[in-house]
Length: 123
Image 1 (cartoon, rainbow, N blue to C red):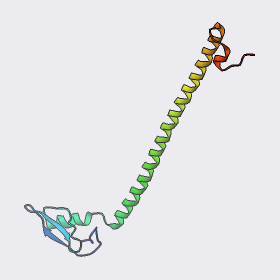
Image 2 (tube, rainbow, N blue to C red; image 1 turned 90 degrees about the horizontal axis):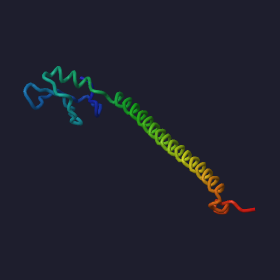
Image 3 (cartoon, helix red, strand yellow; image 1 turned 180 degrees about the vertical axis):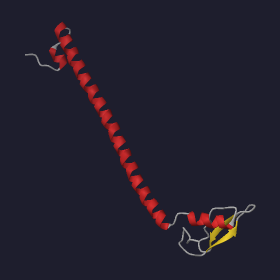
Image 4 (cartoon, rainbow, N blue to C red; image 1 turned 90 degrees about the vertical axis):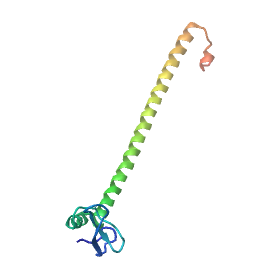
C-alpha cells in the first residue's frame, strides 16, 4: 500500500468498516480513513488511488491560479460595468446639454425669456 495521503507515513493498515462486508484502510499515525469498499483488496486499491501530497500541491497551485483568474475576471467585469455606466451617463449628459441648448434657442427666439435667464449676458 502507498503512504498516507494526509501525513505521508507508511503506517496504514486494512480494517473493518461499519456495515456488512465493508473494509477500509486506516493510517495508524493520523487516523485518516480511506474509502469503504466491499473487500480488503478493493479498500487497498482505493487507498492507493487517493491523491498524495504532490498531487495536492499541484491541485493547490491550480486552485491558486484559478482564484487569481477569477479575481482578475471579476475586476474586469466590474470595470466594464463602471465603464458602461459612465458611457451611459456621459451620453445622458450630452443629450441633456443638447436638449438644453435647443430649448434655449427656441425660448430665445420667442422672446419669452431674457438672454440673461439662459446664462448669456446682454450686450
